[in-house]
Amino acid sequence: MYIPQYYKNENVKEVRQFIQDNGFGILVSQVNGKPWATHIPLELDVDSADKDILVGHISKANPQWTEFAAQPEVLCIFNGAHGYISSSWYKQEEVPTWNYIAVHVYGEIEILSEEEVLQSMQKLVDNHEKGSKHPVSLDDFSPKTLRQVRGVVGFKITITDI
Amino acid sequence: MYIPQYYKNENVKEVRQFIQDNGFGILVSQVNGKPWATHIPLELDVDSADKDILVGHISKANPQWTEFAAQPEVLCIFNGAHGYISSSWYKQEEVPTWNYIAVHVYGEIEILSEEEVLQSMQKLVDNHEKGSKHPVSLDDFSPKTLRQVRGVVGFKITITDI
Image 1 (cartoon, rainbow over the protein chains, first blue to last red):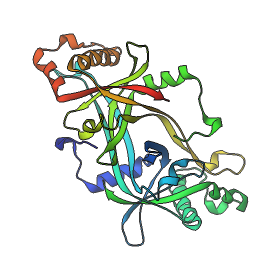
Image 2 (tube, rainbow over the protein chains, first blue to last red):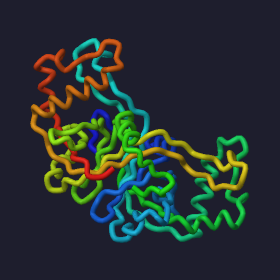
Image 3 (cartoon, helix red, strand yellow):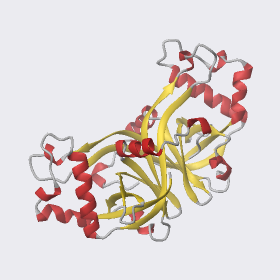
């Protein structure tokens, strides 16, 4: 991502908060030599070695995961508010522009075990149900519903650059 | 983009309208063998041969354009509304999910001449100033301001797949 110096936010705490507040991201990698993107919730977490990671899962029917092992370097895009800035809003002559906030995260992707995926889903659901009137938990689900986990591929991305 | 059959929108008119309504997109290509993304307005248009194209421009300081000639196949992502769907909203047992609308466009990118960039900016500005109380036009700008066009690289993307 190209960022002019005066638009950079070097405040890591704010950047982390932005990712948590805008966690519905885009996972970008290569499939058959072409860029491929999937829109998914990505949870910021730390692994057992206290390294920053992003955790998520995609459908097994999505071919993107088949190339994770061969090309583990992926990009995650997080989008925030954006809007057209009209020249007519300025007192002086200015070209129009578009204001936006975005965070790009690079990392090494690695597929998780079924057990690890279930654990990550538990966290994901708890996180998003926090604001619900009647929050549900993975513990409430029947074994039949939980077997749906077999239809996804879970992964963790060890962050190398933000 | 992986799309389960029942979520596909095959209505080309609606897809085109979505791109026009959500034209602040993400241009994805490769830089130094890694995925690289830039957030920019992309205008749907047709070229002189009546082929569908996307037109846009990025800063000359953004290294992304330096690899357009070597790797012209790019992905453009357009995002729409999205939201977490809680299990607690269903009568029956359901896993939570995330609803979203997105359009992915693949195409061959080609750099435009300075004159073509100015023409495309004229269209872009006219389009976005339509709703302004006091719409500005590129014609209103001084030669000095218009020289800022030299700071950007304009491009057109001939659409190969949506």
